Length: 251
Image 1 (cartoon, rainbow, N blue to C red):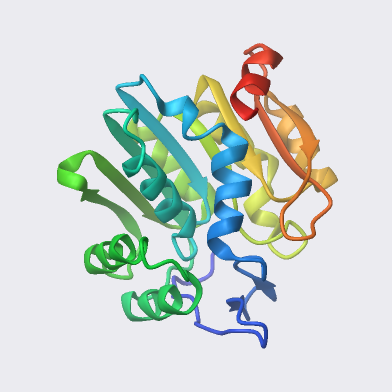
Image 2: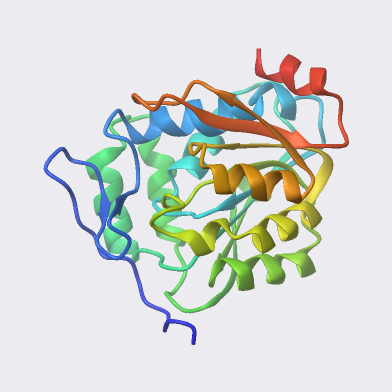
């Protein structure tokens, strides 16, 4: 039986990292939430270079959490004069924060005044805490954030009806040992259907189960240096594109 829909609880560890009592895991590295987003998800998906000269660039994320990955991506896109015409970002979240808690979390952990106006815009547009699909528009419609508040499998199935064709995949969410449903092989099969033939992905984990799920569902991976003291993380691509394409984007 599925758990009832419920919001996330705002809790911090002694070192200031945001913590999930439900999953007994942290939302971000103690080395910095923004720095982690930039290292693990933007740079490891070859961004901002890969969205240049494109009319549209699309990203799908598993686990919206605090929205730090979205904010870091939006800020980098906005700061890039060669950016794509539009940015589409779809993210799923089973346990969203309330708007008030999201704002408190941002004030506590972002630590970059230049990004706070974007965080404030996100909080101001934040939807009601109820299951469903919510489309938030920013920058006069050039940036679209689609939020799916649902269990990961249900959310990805709903995304199939939204004509998602992701250029990049942010595999986030709590650690596989803490939240195994997020990393189920069936979810990777759905992500394959939701991604473009030249899609890339990045994730902070290097779990063996995640490696197997990736390969079983048409992705190639390689291990690279992790962030914040982690020895390794995974980056990769749909198996249909040349290895050198990703290597070029990540250098």
